[in-house]
Length: 117
Image (cartoon, rainbow, N blue to C red):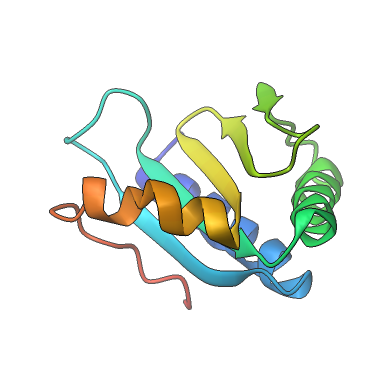
């Protein structure tokens, strides 16, 4: 997948999350920094139901294009859900969990991808 396609996928994920009222949506550009993924997308929901709605919105939106995650972890508890789209990894947090784990601070030196194209 080209960098442009990965960026487009990242922006689509953000759009689907925003449609479900996801908050504080940030994308961290990890290209050349991490072997895990090229982009992380961080999204907050205010409660477990909203986290579930965000996950469902992303799955359905991308699924309509034939894009499915390799795996999803944490969906049952809906406190921190990881959706693995290969080079793009989505982290959907309950607001309190995001504040606790502070992934943005862990990757503070990495640039952020502008989500509005």
